[in-house]
Image (tube, rainbow, N blue to C red):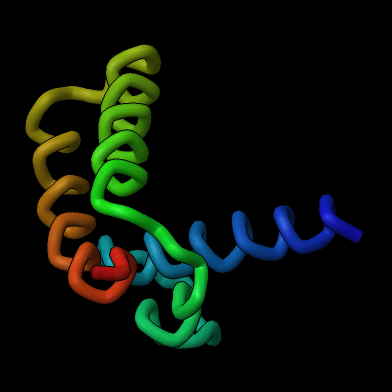
Length: 84
């Protein structure tokens, strides 16, 4: 059951990223605020996630320009994901 939830989250995340970058995907999930409500994601969690994301992109040699473009899409989501 837990793996199915994780796979669903990855699928939705991928579709949302695809849509946000101008791809042909359709995102049918909840808005970020609703989807993450009650998850108790802290600023430290958020910062660590962004750091890991950057490390993965670097590992796979994603060019800096594209990394910066992806970061520009993610950073505004903090207000909806991180609980104060």
